[in-house]
Amino acid sequence: MSSGNFCHTANETGIDFKKIVDTLECPIYITNSSGVTEYINQAYLRENPIIDADAILGRTIDDIIKEGKYFKNAITTEVLKQKKEAMAFFVHHLLPEKMAFVSGMPVLDEENEIEHVVSILYAQSFFQKLHAKFNYPIYSFESYHEPLETKRLSTPLPFANLIGISKPMEELKRIMLRVAKTDASVLIRGESGTGKEVVAENIQKLSARADRPFIKLNCAAIPTSLIESELFGYEKGAFTGATSGRAGFFEQANGGTIFLDEIGDLPFEAQAKLLRVLQQKEIVRLGGTKPVKLNVRVIAATNSDLDKKMADKQFREDLFYRLSLIPIHLTPLRDRKNDIPLLTEYFLHKFDAIYNRIIRFPTQTLKILVDYSWPGNIRQLENIIEYLYICCDENFITEEIISPLLNKNQQRSQPGDIDDELLNFCCRQIRNNHSLPDILSHIERTVLTLASEKYKTTYHIATALGVSQSTIVRKMQTLGLGRRRSSQDTEMICYQG
Image (cartoon, rainbow, N blue to C red):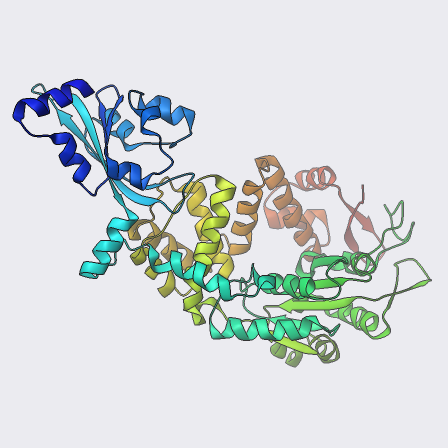
């Protein structure tokens, strides 16, 4: 039935259906069986101010979606495809604050064939009114959208990426502002995923060294045999494969700041060399004799129990006191629950831009996030949200979607499960459009590097990893990993190319 026929039928009954539909507060969009737009009521135009009715009436939904000017998807297409009622959660791609449920209903003729599709939009304002009148919270989005904008106004600009309004966060920001004005060494302690690197970055940005180098180093990721050369550099000919000299991380950071992450995993023998550098403020490259003076601020971080490590003689007390002139402890996410809605909002907007789509949480789902213990802290929250953008087809994340995902992650600490570090790495690689071979190559390199630290021959590495020795040798050659032999030991080196 065409738009003209629609009006004609209305006139025959003596009822002005157009006037009635325009009186309704719910936005209504009507198409015919071919998806051609027949009618849009005034409430729909008020809710979607960017829409030009004259530019849409008489056009098919597919044509409008293809143009991409007004909307990128429509419930009408689902109704026509499935030939039955459909519902969806909708977020406008140009107006992300315009969130709504949309219900599409087919109007059937005597032969049960579709004559029209009527789409009704239940906008956010509708649920806000419902919430105000009946205290009905399940679809109340303002619970974390509006407070975030309000709180941002009171958050100092330097802390734009340090999200939180809890007492521990406010105290952390106060300490950081004071610490940043000095060159004192800082030791940041906290559980994995609490944001130690973010804190270090903020201290650097607030300091007088903000425009100087900021070098990040994960001490746990460097094989013992490479620690000295990576930290302090080496001269040409210092070892097999050293065809030229290279400045170490400390030298690269000269004048700026070096961030030593996972300092608790630094091998004990390397700790003495690091202490000497911190005390004398100079380094000597591996294979060299000339000292290089340093002006480097050191920020270290760890999730290890350094007190226990010192008691077990696994971490030097003198190095600990040298590094922890200013100690900072980060509170785990489970102890600052009122920051979780703000962090959720921050990550949602971050991934909106990266993945060019929008997902949101209703209040009840958000409550599940707040009540969860978050053993992986902020990193786990970020990973969960990014996982939803990558793997979930829904825009509206219900309890049924999030609960099994959180339960699965709760068990991830068991042996054999993928840990948060690996999940974080994989998500980051996918986000940066890295190919599967590149991702697998990086993982293989890491595994072989760690295996070479534990096992001294390729035969033992192959046995431990359950492959042939020739496979290990071939993969190490392909990845640029080699082995050098001495009368006492065999160790892996990384050729620089």
